[in-house]
Length: 342
Image (tube, rainbow, N blue to C red; front, top):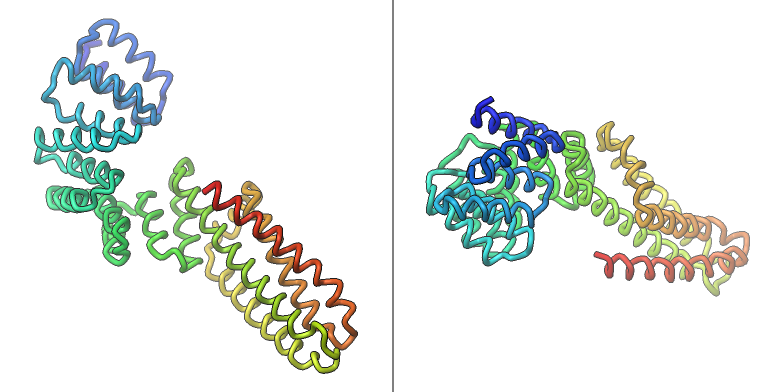
């Protein structure tokens, strides 16, 4: 089999991520011709596919040592350096790739991504716009452009870019994920979008991390509602005649039931079938989410108990008061650990 056919086979194997076969084919081909630039670049692509930045950089440098004017080598070098947090060198390598092949939209898109990691938003914005100009029918460059808008907090422009990407490639998981997080407080849309991105690409780590982050924010909101509810109920009944507290506390209890029940039912109806089945599994896998939810439910149930029982006397309030204090203490401990870990 000729070297060209070997190279085509290696790239096809990389496309389907059959890494052991890729390694065997590369080892045989490079043993036959260790100075083949195309094989060295294929090796760099293979290591980039598994996020092995040091080996990607080594392979790209080896290729550039033989052929320093190959744009693809500088692109791989830029991505590897960026993963190693060498952002200045990464941007220089990406700029070199653009100068060598200014008509390739991928080089401009790579420069945009690398510049974003360096927080050079002006360069990122210009590079992404040029990539879109060169390849308006390429979904990936619209995703990159949307990401530059998202990092600059221009959420509407970002959403338009992601919508264009999805119009061109409806199965683009990254576009679905990023479109979902353009509206982080539209909970149902956020969860549905992140779940659909995961359904398209179950190995997309950032989509899963964003999904867990969204669930944690939602559980903290539930915790705040429970805390405020129990605190309000406690103030309405603490130290008062039970009969005087009855009207106010029962009114609060009814309001809590209506508002919380309505919000919960509305969110559940707005969720697609996939998130309904899968979110419980995600919550079981992330202990912090489950614990925060448990505290929120504990506080809310305590609030409802206090609201509807003042006519029976203050004993229940006295019993629930330690629950309130324990819930606050444990919740703040979890919050502190979340902040420290995040």
